[in-house]
Image (cartoon, one colour):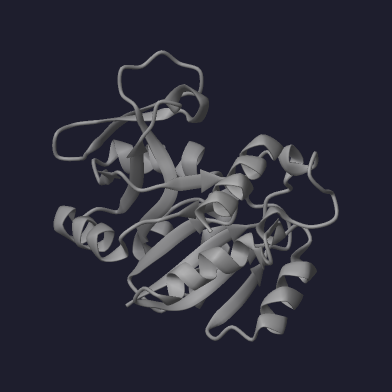
Length: 230
């Protein structure tokens, strides 16, 4: 079993073309909310507690999960913006497992948790990133790795790299490793480079589908995908 952490604390500045009234995680998709799709996916996996890292419009998220009567949901509200890495560090005492599954609250990913966790343990990684091949790697930034999945470097958005492996927004991180890092900072910009330097950062590349709804165009594309799917 593994506890999960969903990052829901962003200010959502890129999403304000859709709405200023609710956080991205509460964006509607048909008769559901994005956060419901993520939580329901986790409930089909071997997941223990699910911690929501909240900040901006936190009360709305708290009210929503209470209304849905989800079990094993814990809300961790940041007292001030701490960054994606700092949000996990702030909630550290709420995790009961040695590894933590981390997901973005604005990204829906169809992934195999058992496969990802097995890979993480096999590599004895401090952190494992789920990556996916994409022809839009320049839009997201991409990851350079070796044949064993060891992360060697990160490329910024809009860079011309031959590697086309993009971060799908799903991670497994050792709880012990988080405790040794700064209490504030970005998971991607501050924490991952530290893991990379220690040669304990790996990535598992799959053909999983992932949908980032962080901008109006991506949100509209996902809603269209769901309508066509259903």
